[in-house]
Image (cartoon, rainbow, N blue to C red; front, side, top):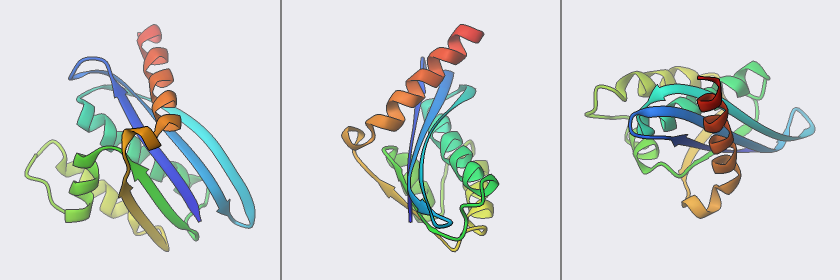
Amino acid sequence: MLRVYVDAATKGNPGPSGGGVVITGESNDRQIHEQLHFSLGECSNHEAEFKILIASIEWLIEHKHTQTTILLHSDSKVTVQTIDKNYTGNPTFQPYLIKFKELEKHFSMILLQWIPESKNKGADNLARQALQKYIRSS
């Protein structure tokens, strides 16, 4: 099983955004510990949360971690509730929900769970690093 922690950081709303991902656990008979950060461009804070969730899933697919149970952790209630309910009234979030549904088909089991910010410090720190890197390069 792999535990995947995702978080986004945005300066302004909308504004420059970065995302962080921490991946720990076992997959393909080996221990995994990855710390990733991604520039997410200019977007709202909620969009950034969706973007980093999608980016983490795409990374898992690219690195062939689809045959193990994936437990995704996010401190974004909007993101988790949208995925759980398989519904959003916000047209901006619709493409992210559709993309998640597409990507989840690649996995034997993928679960999304809300966690409080205090339990997501690693991903939060990486998201802030990605945001600062994006701001410096702009």
